[in-house]
Image (cartoon, rainbow, N blue to C red; front, side, top):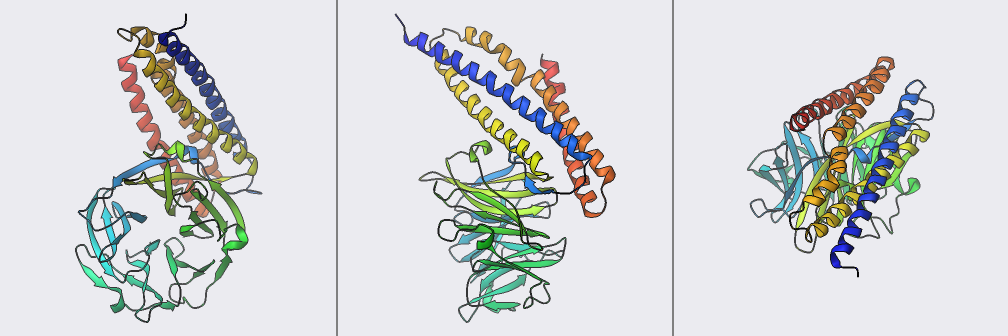
Length: 417
């Protein structure tokens, strides 16, 4: 007669088998992607476009809204000095909050009549460019410095441009250009000549659906415009898009698989999107019925052929499946251990799995994978010129940093084995 212990053991064995299968699928997908990436190194840029590697997400930090700063949740966060600067809707106006490198709030300033705060920009001198409320009831583009602990009134700021309706502002330091949304259009202009945009694009023409999607934020990194849509609803999920504003060529639109980001709660509202060299910063307001947590991540930017992107999409799906299989396995393992006097049999059964995925063998695979990526990008760097060469240099620096961390972890694991 089958017992509860037998059922738990059977569930455990089934979960272990699924885990081994999904792990093998992930390793194969990673190998296929690296091989395709290596092959694409020797080609030219014909047919290439900008995309992102969602599987490469890296958490920067998180924080939970507190009462020590009068805000209700992060809206837009940018790198600032050695940390970050973000906007929050406060009781007295729009707050600009300064964070350290792990998103711990340090200080803040308040801008009365500060506007929406859904996006802002920083120029090369550290000035904030933002939409604020105009004294005539409309909106204006304003420029001001960050002043910790101070309160300023936007009605006293010089209006660099005025509009009757809501706008959202960006600043691209690399090109020294200003961007802003108005209605369903996005405009790019010289900051000294805002009334005469150099480029513009109708967002509805490249896939934005006003009726079913909530526009959250955008980022200008010429020639590309990146944007976030989504709300606290499965009908309007967190989605990332990118378009070349010079050619009006859509690069991609992707709905996130937020399960791969390991956030606390199932519902995630897309907030920040900010392009910075070889990565983009993205944030989510993640919550349940009583608690809201802001998470900030980086995602690698890739210049990929469409064939390469297919392999990357497969890798992303495999990573998601592996994360779910690990979660199911850990749950089944916990249930099974309840029926063991010491849990030793489960530990023995899982030793092979632990050696393959958590200890030396797993770490060796990570190191080997990163080394191969470095070799591929090094080949690309040797052939590149101009801004592409600098972007690849940034990517190499990031990969070498990752390799150093992985090698250190491998050394520690070998000492324990």
